[in-house]
Amino acid sequence: MFVLRSEQVISPGRAEDYDAYQLHSLEAARGQPGFLWEIRLRYLGNYAKRLTYQLWESKEARLTYSRGAAWVRAPHGLLVGPADSGFYAKVAGVQDAPLAVGQYVVDRHFRVSNGVQGEFDALEAGLCDLAKGQPGFVARQGLKFLGNDTSYVRVSIWRSWEDVEQWVSTAEYVAENDAVMGRVVWTTADRYEIIAMASEVPAFLALP
Image (cartoon, rainbow, N blue to C red; front, top):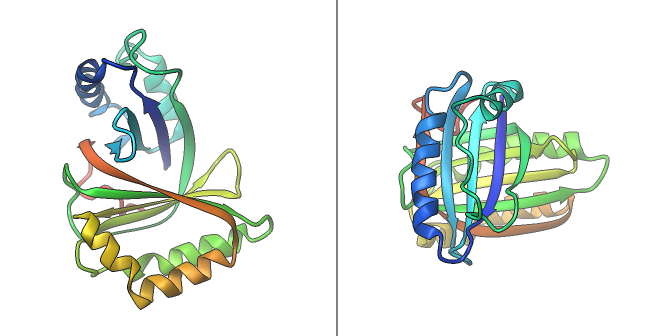
C-alpha cells in the first residue's frame, strides 16, 4: 500500500473555487480501483495552505487514476504553483476512534541519521501504541518517504488541541520523544484541521 502526501497553497481570492474543486475531486477518487481513503486538511498557521493524504493499494493504481478520464485537474490559477507531492510507505498505525471533520492533526516530519533507518522503523512501530487510550486520541500513523529513506512523517489525530497539549505533558510522551530525538537530525511539526474526507474502508489509518 502507498500513501500520497500532497501540499497545496490556494491563490488569493480562490478559496470558494478550491472548496468546489475539493468536493469534485473527493467524489471522483471514491470508488476508483485501488482507492482506500483520503483526508483533506487545513493548515492552522496559514489558511491558504492545504494538505491531502490518500491511501492506495499500489502506486500504480494512483498513477492510473491520475492519467485517466476520471481525474479532476485543478482549475487554472487555483493554486500558487504546483502541488508538492510524494509517495510514502506505512511504518506503523493505530486507531481508537472514527475520524471526523473538525479534528486536529499534528503533521510531524523527521530526518533520521543515516544508518539508523531500520532502527527508527522498529522504534516508531513500538512507540505507536503509547498514545492509544489517551484522552482525545483518535488515530496515528508513521510513514517513510519513498524518495529518501531518511525522511519520515508521523500523522497524529486528536479531538481537540487541548487533548494534544495534555498528551505532550505526559510521561509517556516525554519518554517517546526522548527515544526518537536521539536518532534524528531534525524534526518539525505543524498543526492542521480535518476539513473533508472520503473512504472505501471502515478504518482509515489502522491498516497494515
